[in-house]
Length: 386
Image 1 (cartoon, rainbow, N blue to C red):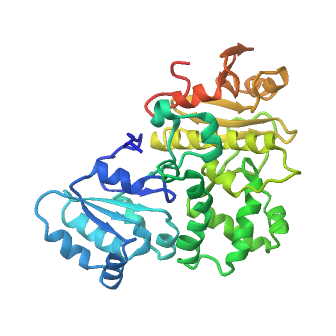
Image 2 (image 1 turned 30 degrees about the horizontal axis):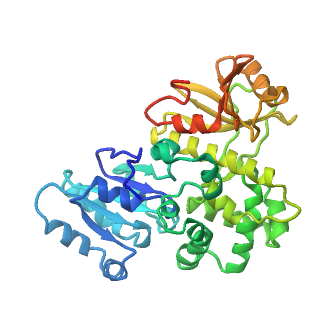
Image 3 (image 1 turned 90 degrees about the vertical axis):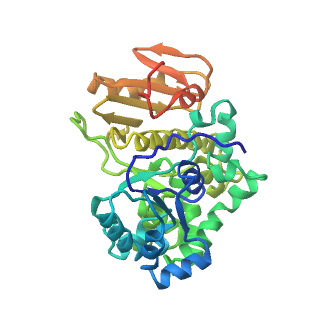
């Protein structure tokens, strides 16, 4: 697979770069900092050396002359290194550290303060459609997702199928995050049914036959490993009573498809619809992250069941999105956006669907989903050029 320019940008100072396995963190740092001193803690020799003597990092860094960048991959594996990093930054402000990781959980559990604000926080995500350009295909993205690890593989389906197992072995089991690996595997399958829905912990616990408190811990593990996230309810200036619980999403449409079991009683359109909404969610999540907090992602649901899938809100704009896995727009598809617009006249309301034509109805813009995703870029607003 050719080198693809990512929307992730160097902030110009020391920073943490967190993201799930396979999102291309190491590849990006090699391209962005080709002359950097690199410490890969996935390498067993390096891991043993720094685990036993974290102060060795100071000796190695001080042995190099001049202005330098130091990249440490999977920093969570040796949290004690952060004390040495902190010391080295204070010692010479010309030094920059790029600290990648697939989880901040172990760092927090070790009581590490993430360098007390001396390093920014950035996140890596699956590809956005605009990064792939002409090679992006909506149907393929819905089936395989957009993980760089998967798309670069000779056999993408095989890699995607083993992705969850990779995490079970290399993250969950190796770090001792759970006591019962079988129960966690059942939880992963069960929670896939909650993708794009409000998460009901009690229902998930009952389905996977695990105690409720344990399931709460499992959900926290998913979030700490960046495999899943919750989208909060939009409550600003709410004129109607709104739902209290956030919606849950797995971080990649392909990972969702690999975890979600299907059978004779599962409707293909239901799974496809959840994959489509999740694909839009991961794009909006990446868009807000790459814009460094200039907008936030929400959803809206009243207690009467009127729901808008996504609300993007910030100082630069206000957008509401409804996602429909349909090839033509029906009047009922616009009902939620009409209700939202009645309460928030300032919002731009957009319906994303699987058709080919761009339409405008009742001041609601209806856009083919593939067209919208191809045009979504962090350097411009979501509806720029539409």
